[in-house]
Image (cartoon, rainbow, N blue to C red; front, side):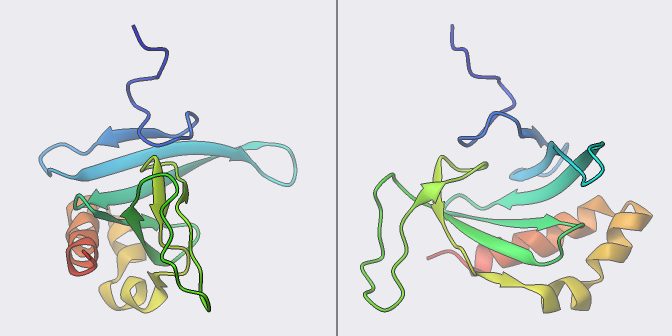
Length: 135
């Protein structure tokens, strides 16, 4: 029997990634942290996993971010802008630092979807971003 918690996906066991009912590839990810005053703070992150890529949105921090699933040791080989696969909380290893869009969040009204409970709408937007980013 594995010691790994069944709700953990990537390499960080403090993040619970729970499948969203009725939408294949959609996950609500729960984690916590400490605020400056030492009190705890929960975080909900929305993920749509398209297989080779996933699109992530955390309402507190803003932009949609794209991550590519990679193997440990992967590098893009670019001398000017090198990138190396890093441990990630959703994929074991990923790349994608800097691949994000705040305009998409604003144009699609993700904050309003979140506060009105339109989670399906949020996942629909993330699906578009994850699917268009496959490569």
